[in-house]
Image (cartoon, rainbow, N blue to C red):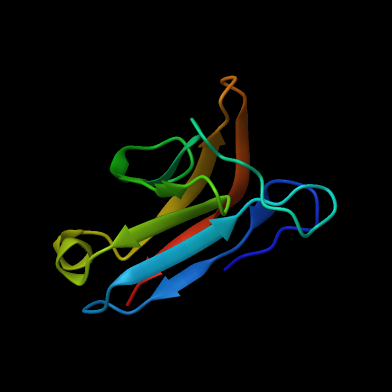
Length: 112
């Protein structure tokens, strides 16, 4: 699980071995750092691109668990093995119930 306690977006590079499933969990909490944000009607995606403004290789839609404020991003090993890139730029975007957009993470997603 990932905790954000700095200015957004946070640059976090990811290195992941081909042949293994990929999983990321992000949990949103209120300012008290304890209470989960109710993420009812929120949506989140992780987009993998050829460079920041390049062709989109893939978009992963997170599973939302509103009561715990968690978003789970899962990519199976079979799907990862089908990607024809070794490195991509990624961006995680969260859209709240009012349509407000937040980009908590960006970085490089490397498959090796």
